[in-house]
Length: 250
Image 1 (cartoon, rainbow, N blue to C red):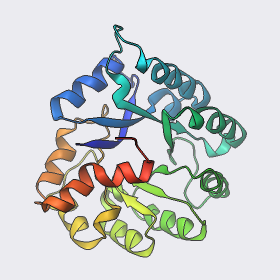
Image 2 (image 1 turned 60 degrees about the vertical axis):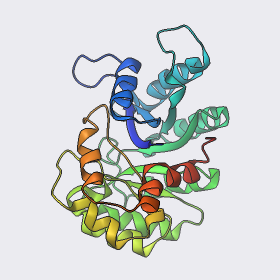
Image 3 (image 1 turned 180 degrees about the vertical axis):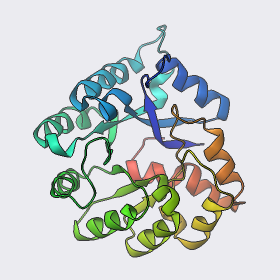
Image 4 (image 1 turned 90 degrees about the vertical axis):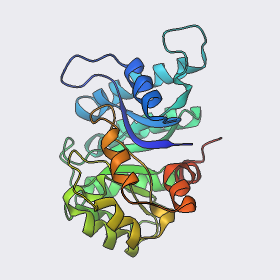
């Protein structure tokens, strides 16, 4: 079993098929389930992208359609901290469906650094809803995220890219707050990066993420494989921690 906690649905800046691409990539690498955010929601318009993804996920139970098999996809409600009233409306509409299991916040595209009051308000809202949040982190921002998580009761956050080039800060962040989770995807793949993190943090805080369909899953698979994880830890990273965090009905 493999669960990808950092994936995307929808076209990027270039021509691309949509649901079929997700499924083809998942099949190629043996990914059973993926939690996706709508590209349109992350980059352009959160409410419109969330609505589009909701329609796709609603159709996943239908058989004999072009989208057959996409019941393997779960959704993130994309949250723009600077449009929090819209985000709250979407969260209240989509989380109860059971097809959306978390929230996605991209700090750069929304102009909302982790240290901003808008991010604090957004994460407090998600904590009140018991909704895990995947947050884009880079460099030292993963430390800011951990500090904010520690100050926000009940909040659970995934540090997207585990800080990217700041992965050693991610170690400090995870060790400082046990409600911070780390996933490895990044457009670069320095040797030993995930192995160093996995050796230094509680394995219950490690998840698997690929950034598909923006990045080929081979990068994340290679990083995790190179860490030579033991059977139990490998299982936690591959799916068990994600299933527990999101309450997925396996």
